[in-house]
Image (cartoon, rainbow over all chains, first blue to last red; front, side):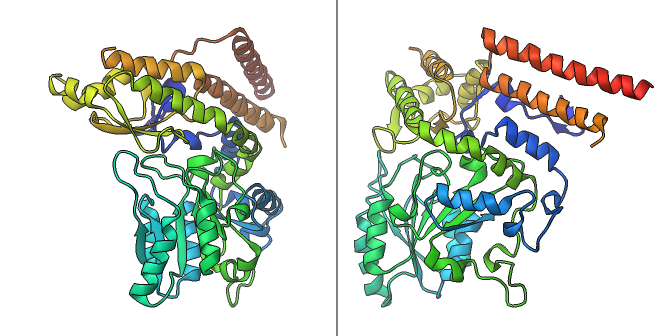
Length: 375
Length: 59
């Protein structure tokens, strides 16, 4: 079925979708209803009070108070995505110095830093197979930067859960180090907030960047949240010289349509689902345990603490070499079984996610992978 | 809101509820008793709204 010249997308209705980029952003029925209603351009601005974040019809202002509370922070603004939240902080903080990040950082963190004029330094991971970042290494790296440049970094960034291995790093330890050195701390929660409970200030974070379309059951466009602690309000949420109500770092008003409504509509559901995070981790661990019955090796920390699973799969690579469809065989074998979300052609290493699947679906996925692998 | 408009949105929203059932039961859509009941309830709702709009437009 087509929509004009475009193919209808029915991946969520017709398949089990394992794409880690998409599982946490699957919308709720309420989000889709909000999107239908607020689909037109600037639909959210019917009752504009001068800026998006102070709008009360629909109640964006009230939503932002609730979100701040949910994240254990003091203030929040909607952004066009997580990267825009990170960039906003970096731009406001940058003195043209440096930023210390983790080696598993998302590319958009690095690009944002470059755009903000910050030199990027990285805390390394421990390499294959776990690729773990040790939060305590932040202290040593901060000292190294001081020795090299004469100054401490302008900002520290930690990727709470990275998008490559799904490793969860303890932000509390990084937060403490940042306090000791008086360096502000930005926590990138693109793969964590909205899935698991996060109380930012308790973790020592000054800023929290969130992705609505990745982890808050939101869609209809891009949407993010930037939440901050009180002491940074003046610097990060500063209004324009002639436009006091328009925060500079989000260019006055950020997401001006259905994606913000989708996030607001999904929020009650998100508040509940974070309470079931342990169950999501159990599903990921179950799948990994099942997959290792054949020649499949998990990458990233073990046991898993997140639904994003990266695996090294010699079993499928071996089959691909003798298969007429070559590397594409796995994609088609899975698709025939109603499973989708992996990049076509990949058989050596790939990423999947169990987030939001029922136990029946997770068990079926495990059985399918094993069956294709010849178990 | 005009009732025909309201009923149109109601139908669109019911379809989202139906879509959710297909999402939860993908890929085989083997429905349990509760899900079957819910699907039939949704379809009834859509039919009723359709009938209302048909009557209104035909007058």
